[in-house]
Image (cartoon, rainbow, N blue to C red; front, side, top):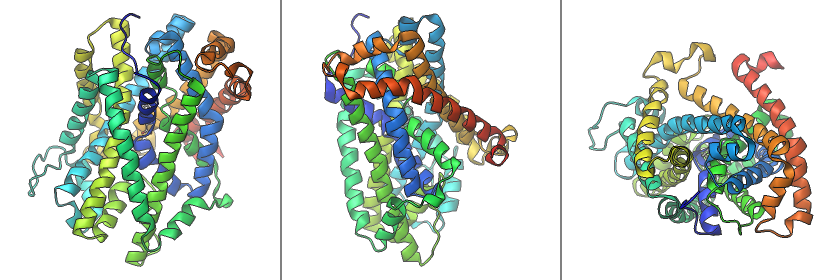
Length: 475
Ligand code: PFF
């Protein structure tokens, strides 16, 4: 494909792919799932999923993209024929839905950042009802304090920033944005951990997070660990195929994939190391034993309370830094999601990047409205009759999780049956001449041929059954 933009080198690619991986999944979802699933034992299951199942698939996806040099749909059709293009389209569609709800949650974080840094968020007396009001505040454009609380505006702004960056192209847009935001993100995170660990009762939080209690291990822990690992590494929907297509032949894919996995896992790990000491500090400060460490509202309800306890100045600084961290993490992911769809339309339909970016951004923003309105504003979206009374945002997010693990299973089948392992190995040999005779090759080949497709196939079916009929019925 002539004149295709590409990453300038290894660092650009790694930062962009790690940026895609590091996101709300690490800082919002990982800690609350860990809280729900027994802390350390969840961490252990998650790590096993990352290195046993996700790493080989990541290597495979990047190899597919680099070998074909096209978007997700184009890569599958080029290497496997038209029929496999459907898998590419399936991934692209999943990405559209992920971005639709992801942008809503990113909008909440953006709104919290502005309202904590410049507004009155630290003066609230009840953060649960504040959050309830906030996520339902769609049309009230101006609050008494002068900063809007409308999450319609926040999520629109977030989408505009995303579209602006993607519109600049790979090197001048995506790569540059990641080169700025990723180091900043690490710095803020490490600063916040350093601070959190000095607080009273912090070590109780560290213990909860790091000392596994095997009696807490349940099948739900495995389901949650697996889907979180896939979501977190942006696997199973063509994102890394797309980014891989912009990668030079002289880059070493297995080592880049290892760095990306470690970078992503370390942010998830560090987020827990920041959040659990903070939560235990709050328990100590309020002299209570149970603070909700679980569930989606963890960072929106519990953490603002903690920042309030720190006092008006320090709370504003720490709270502002925390929500800025989340915004950076979310933005590096939303740009990668949008790029998957943009690459498809630019490559396959020869449309202009600048135009496509804005059209898609608008469409996906509109697609996110039902998720936005499902937090209480529209009762029928808040309690879906066909989905065991859960809300629409949860439904979409669950469906996306399923499509990622299923997508991962199909990637393996594609490599083994159609593209062939030997072609993948040839691709992986570029930029890594030792690969052919290495233990890593044996491991990646074995995992992609047997371990990943079998385990992912079984677990995906179980997760689907669990979602629709419930765990109690299953086991
Ligand atoms: N990995 C992102 C996160 O953990 O927040 C979410 C994501 C981004 C999923 C890009 C899929 C994707 F293509």
